[in-house]
Length: 91
Image (cartoon, helix red, strand yellow):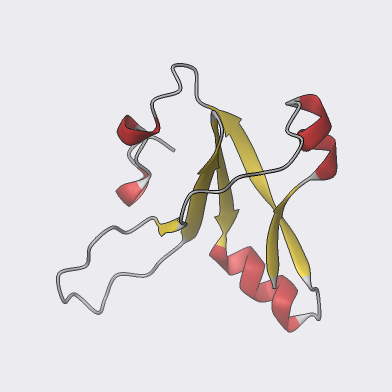
């Protein structure tokens, strides 16, 4: 399954070619807790956060889809270090 940005969003936000940072999951470090369920995967490109709902990704994958578009959100100050999604703090 390819996780992508919607082509309409690429035009809207003038993203020519995404340059993704490594993806992260929303639950953060589990410290050995097997009960944590990852709900979202997210990455950043330029001044944007891109989020994919893992339940929707799994559903689409089971249905035979080969790609899934994420939700893109501009990061106003461009500081991705402070824009964490762990436990949905800033989502």
